[in-house]
Length: 188
Image 1 (cartoon, rainbow, N blue to C red):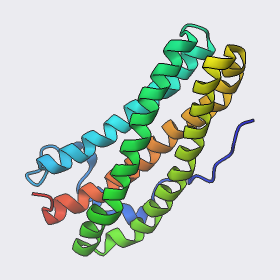
Image 2 (cartoon, rainbow, N blue to C red):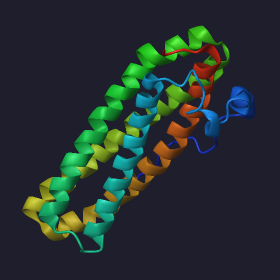
Image 3 (cartoon, rainbow, N blue to C red):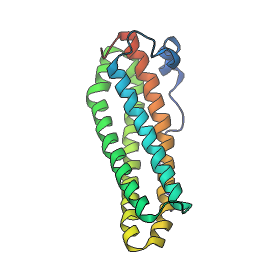
């Protein structure tokens, strides 16, 4: 059975993207305020996108029988753990250190902050579901390969949900935060 999640489908409202018009994504790297800390933050986001894609594609390889059950369970354990642990740590750091800094620098961040914090909460729900499903598939891979295969359909649904959610959420987060960072020359 595929679980449905309560995830935001729309991007950020136009009024929250006002600075993005002044600092479009295509100009970020050339801006003198685009520093190493911001590059590292965006690099972490790219890593999360890649991990989401790896988990989805590994599940597809198992489902199309081009990946053995042992290889699949080892890869899902490795990449899944990496994604879940690092996303929790990253979002905790954003919620308690990074986002308050941006909100203090620019009141325009406050409106978007509520949306991003709700996203973080919903992502926690999805990651918990992913961890339960992945652990079940990993356990079944040692007990009953056929049942592990059958359960992987639900895991695939969750993996696709995570991948799509990360693409939208991280893009929104970047397009809200980076223009504020550049405008106020933060994170130097």
